[in-house]
Image (cartoon, rainbow, N blue to C red; front, top):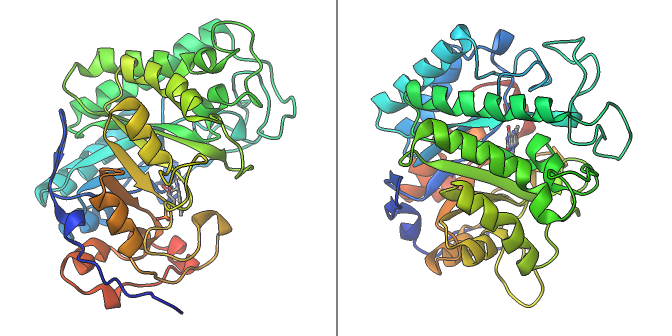
Length: 369
Ligand SMILES: Cc1cc2nc3c(=O)[nH]c(=O)nc-3n(C[C@H](O)[C@H](O)[C@H](O)COP(=O)(O)O)c2cc1C
């Protein structure tokens, strides 16, 4: 393999991050990764220890795996953690405690899967999926569009989760608005064919997200960090775009800023890819430029294959990443599979042990390392 060695100093990754509501000791973020180790939706001691190991080894900010808001169809599986009910929230409080004990910071990723849920999925087999127009990601009609009441209740489910996150000690929240799940189904015209205030042009399609963010902000007050994750790509369509131009990106994101987002988490599968023609800026770079907000970049950091190929991947040089970070194209860097595989990824990079970084092996998905 050519040029797998990192030649540039990794110091830019270890500069403190300071922003209005969140300060971090360095620029590394653990990307949210669904693991399915929470029986009946309750994260246990093993999950708390898994996150604590990352904090202990220098991760600046942990974003938890997606965790379901209080709605019967928020997740598709009995071992996906949820964010409501005494048992699950107690489990999460324990996760926070363990991470804080070793000086880490952590936010939960609040999630509703929308129409990606299949009929008969656990934990509520009888519940039908919900979404803006009742359409699956491939455009098939499955259920009726959400009613205004259903939308209002959903907004309150996110708000309740935000309030609980603050109450049990998290350092902020991340809203999952990416990858073709519920919030993103409102953004994307293929899944949102509404003609009311939640549909139509990009500003209308952003309206559900705006209501969710405003309701969360109302619950957590002005000083609690709200991170918003979004993507162009969908789980079934890697070429999808909700913004074709920088202007469309600004039209989508500006209302979210006004609603109360502090930091954007711009999900791409390969961080080095330019987002729009005529500039080297990636999605995070453009987001920073059009919103003026701090941004997290992500996608195959240190690996030579993207995560949606669901295969293994070899380690690569961090030179390109460091260069972009040093140029302030983005502020923070999320690392997914490498941190799933190796709790010491950040401390190894920090301590000059880059040669000891592990390739990603999909067998790692079966265990909480
Ligand atoms: C096993 C696994 C589970 C994931 N689950 C989530 C999730 O719950 N929420 C989310 O926003 N992204 C999820 N992702 C995407 C990651 O957050 C990240 O964006 C992606 O893995 C790219 O980063 P990487 O190339 O460093 O792995 C998941 C990725 C993996 C590998």
